[in-house]
Image 1 (cartoon, rainbow, N blue to C red):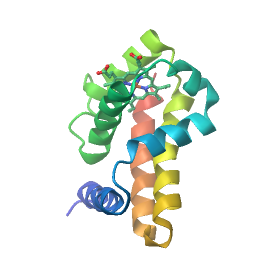
Image 2 (spheres, rainbow, N blue to C red):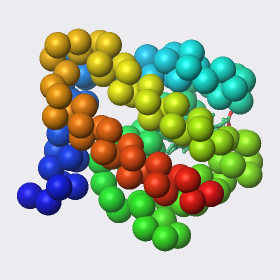
Image 3 (cartoon, rainbow, N blue to C red):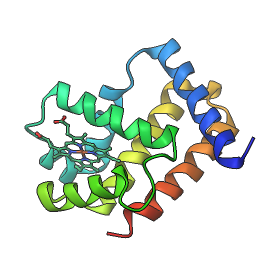
Image 4 (cartoon, helix red, strand yellow):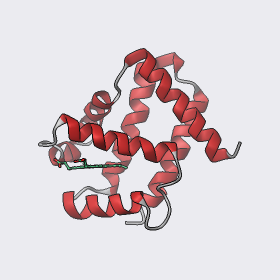
Amino acid sequence: MTDTANEIALISASLELYAERHGDMAPRVYERFFEINPEAAALMEYSDEYMRRRMFASMLELFLSDEHLGPGGYLAWEVDNHIKAYFATTAMYESLFQSIRDVLNQDLETECRSEWQQAWASRIARLMEHVRKF
Ligand code: HEM
């Protein structure tokens, strides 16, 4: 398995265990996101639950495949769109990604394995390399 495939497998395993233990992760992640980044909370003040779920699902896709990371791919399009249309910032992306890690650590406690944490850290660094190009 390549490093990326290995990381993706670890991330996927962590999400599966989370769903088994606690069900839907999205509301917890938004709660944490808004706590650590009040400016992002203000931007998303009027977004409804369904929109937030769609956004969360799109974000997870980026963690589970490299398919959308190329030049002109979904991530590049999405970041450009978010910065122009919603005034999102790269710091907000960092907070959003950090929120997932915080929720996994907090809710899974000792069940959150260290190789999962490393896989998330490495994948976040990779996505942030793309986000920072804007
Ligand atoms: C990789 C990360 C992200 C992905 C994949 C993503 C994806 C999406 C998608 C697909 C939508 C449209 C949902 C729909 O109406 O169907 C959306 C809307 C939105 N996103 Fe994101 N997003 C990301 C990060 C962020 C960040 C960091 C912010 C900063 C606060 C943000 C703020 C918003 C806002 C304000 C909307 C519009 C809400 C509305 O229409 O009321 N997003 N996002």
